[in-house]
Image 1 (cartoon, helix red, strand yellow):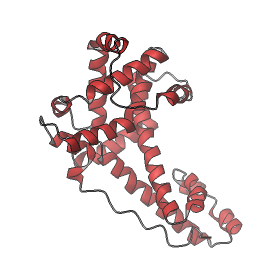
Image 2 (cartoon, rainbow, N blue to C red):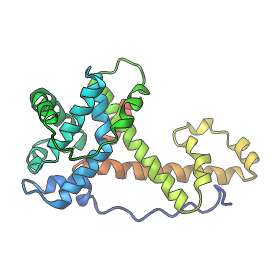
Image 3 (cartoon, rainbow, N blue to C red):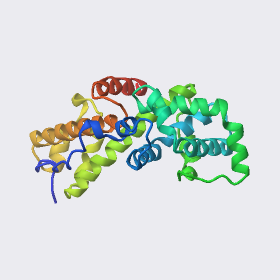
Image 4 (cartoon, rainbow, N blue to C red):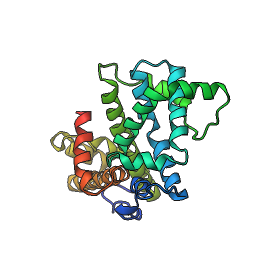
Length: 249
């Protein structure tokens, strides 16, 4: 079996250049809808629907209404003229989603409910069966609806990053190494018991330190790639990174 001291898994091929990330593809399409941009937006919506569900539940909507509202919003968002609205918003997909959802809640909820009663079509399939269970697992704090949306958005990015990182280790046959090392992704370096762990694993302390360093470095790279999918320029990545980390502190 491989050990953390072995050569780390080879990173998967990098994603396309920044100019063709999902959100920039949507923005670049402008007013002319394209199948590629539509698919990119749909994928983003599938990933980031849950922060909006948390937002509307924290606003006081009951479970059934929150489910209906979230589904109806995405059905409206994915209609053919969505790109015109997207182009008018700020460069971050996070901002666009929340502003568009707030407008929808304020102006179109009654009509959406009427359409649902009339058998409106479901355009985007969301895993709403798990939404309420996840919502009840959220911290019982006093965060505002806007703040819990931002917190859950940041956590979704982290969850996706960890899933990609795990996938890379598993593809290299090092899934057990990842399970061992993942707890050190956010730990203070001074608190990691390198000597104790290296003795337990029968490896050198230096090799273990190298493995943890590589894991953290790759996590940071993948996290920035995930952020890049939701902003419109490379200059926004660092600012978005700092902001999202701040909402988790």
